[in-house]
Length: 184
Image (cartoon, rainbow, N blue to C red):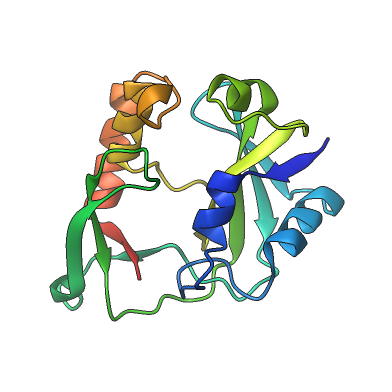
């Protein structure tokens, strides 16, 4: 099985100007090489048949992706409208500023099949393409953000995957993201 780091994931996980909340202590090339030379500890089903999650013990200094919202840190939450790419419409997002979470125990790599990436206009030669990565304390997926589920339901022309919203999964995501936020 071959894995390719897609341009979409590369710009988000390895930006030109490194940020504290992206992958640390390795290059994009080293990351891709690690995925292709080390077996995942676990493989989980993703939100659709074309999506798999490969769980690796964190070999970097990358910190957890999310922080629990508490009375002590709620005042550090910020929000704004942002798009992940120039082609996407901006959506409302929120994040912490001024917090630093612990180093993640696991990297949960989000993979899409070659066929799905072709459908989305991003053809690859490899079997699987990295579209994202979760940095977690446990070897499990954190729920997809509700706005990402909505974007996916809008279809590939709006930056999504064309998968309809699963109401139960959406409610679980709302419950998680009500009590947690990303950080910068």
